[in-house]
Length: 493
Ligand code: HEM
Image (cartoon, rainbow, N blue to C red; front, side, top):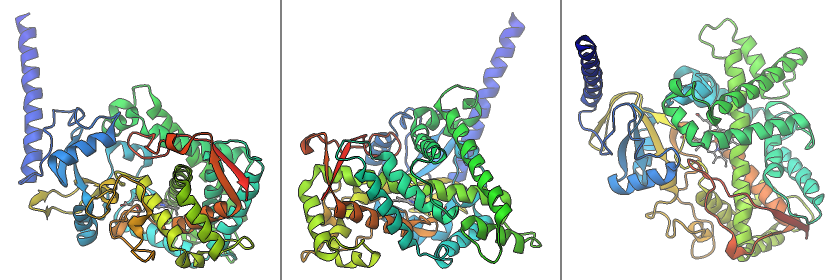
């Protein structure tokens, strides 16, 4: 019994010593630490950053500790940057130091080290440069990206006509069209809207975002090794990821079997050709793992983001019929009804351009940004930030920075218009983030938003099942932002 007590005391002493020693070592590295809530051993700041109320928790901490603060997700320190000044100072003025991708332990399990989004260093440089060049120069086969979007917008119009004025959930209408645009770029072809496999894939993507938002996944993100043994929706995220990867692997095989090196059809063909030409280069990153993950990155990032923004856009318009009326008048005046909208129309449509910018600002669909990491020990605003520290650029605090937007929490296209009604740029418009890791699909997404938004309003009058005053524009998510489910009715104009 006495021996048992001594062993127990020794155990308690050893654990306390280890906790103290690791905390001391970690604090020593920081020299001057940014402010933040005191973490508890192992669980960090889980009491302050609640996995079931992430965004609200971050907002509270921002209010209490100011633009730069430190939290612990489990035992992992994370620097949180808030407001335009701090985010710009890090991502733009110190682009090299703050330009690396940061990965929490859970993200490493979900996404691994391959592909454009998760990689760093030479791998990231090669893959990002290749993807940008392929999407820009290759012109995506014989047709321009603009033409592909215009074509898809017409398919969407035909599909919407079939609803004959009955209310429907617009989620998969928008995601099928938006996804088809990126599909035609990466796989060479669009899918039929009724294609079972396509629908199953889109369901996986949509589910992935919802599952990823669950409190279980947030906890998994901090404690993946333990959570792998705890049942919950986070395990389905891994399952979904595996099924999406399998789909891409199958596409890669089909491309390999039918590849004509003189006539690349799409992103996968270009990658296969590059893999072959770089075969002798030991530093080449053009291998199968990077092909699969980069393609999946484009498919994933290119579908959910833009279609969620569009879904938000139309809900906002349903709440504000007078804003819709102004946009429709501008469409009628500049484009008319007899031809499809084109990208060059945008510069002649300041009101519509301002509304789309304001949709992206208000919808704020990547509110905490995608994690970054610092590449070396650095001094930032008087604090010493050790190499490798994870950084969250909280884009929501930039898009809703009161210094840059008069009514940050209201939908007001005036944020992007001057007193003469001309379009007015705003540096704090950062839905695509900023600096070296700025969204690779920004150009494509902006083109899609403009062309699809205007095509729908050119062709249809929109209504819903609720009165405008009863429409709730607040987000239906916990760590991200997305519109609450709604029913849309469209009638040909
Ligand atoms: C409205 C639509 C979109 C929004 C709001 C959006 C937003 C973002 C944000 C906030 C990031 C993180 C940047 C950072 O690390 O600081 C990002 C990265 C990325 N986005 Fe987008 N995105 C959109 C559409 C797209 C599209 C259509 C594509 C496909 C071509 C795409 C591909 C990517 C990729 C590959 C990255 C990773 C870039 C890197 O790590 O170097 N995105 N996006």
